[in-house]
Length: 377
Image (cartoon, rainbow, N blue to C red):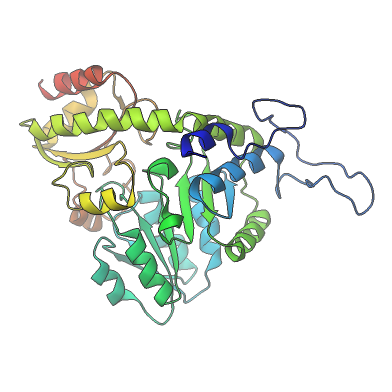
């Protein structure tokens, strides 16, 4: 089936009642027919029918063997990190979401896991950082918020030669535009809060795995730690996925035009959007993905322009997060990346003139009109 059909119908498995919308099984526990018998569900921390339907859909969309849903994107990554032991070494993209950086820099380090932040868009940098105790390579592509692009298939090739796990955060492009497992990745991470849910109304995280060994390990960790996604939130994400294709297409269509408009504006000094042909990662993104998404970062001419823009937008909302139907503008240095050390943040280019735009599905003319009035004051 085409991916847009899978988004709508999932694996095609119908509930026993014939309900078109997967029911919300709001039950913590399930009774047994007899001693030694089970309906397949025992306790919702282990599995719940509503969550299972979402997981089956995500495994299909990413072409994985299994998917596990968690209470947030960070919960998904935190559970995944339990695959590793003290003295293990992990190579991580140097430009990543601030919450992920915080986890690796503080919690993982406390757990004696050695983390090297590396420019994973440079293959030679990855190879030069592989050690005897390296166990995995964790990448975002495109990265948040600098939009760097890493070559998934080449990184996966290097990882396999060295016996490493390749982990890809696919939040920005979703399986609609990019499927890392088909490119050789072992684990795909999603903050399902973003494009998968699509409406800024719930938190969720997903791990999709390429083999049953990883599935068994991660399901054991998940049921032990107990951060599985609730039935209601599972239903919300499943509902959001049904419209993922049309939302991704519309928001990308808007983003392409807005990136060009920003590029031509005299107060905008740099535009970071992988869909622009002059973006350094454009060719790789075009090779490994079917779209460029709707995330744009840009740098304005001065701090005053940045603050006035944030204060004067009306239609566009000054808020954290991304991937919803509404266009959101974010100030990474004060919001998503506030906990990243200043020297590291600014070395990446995340300064007080740097902004990030999550383009929504509103009328293009209205988004541009709002940007225009806020920039021209």
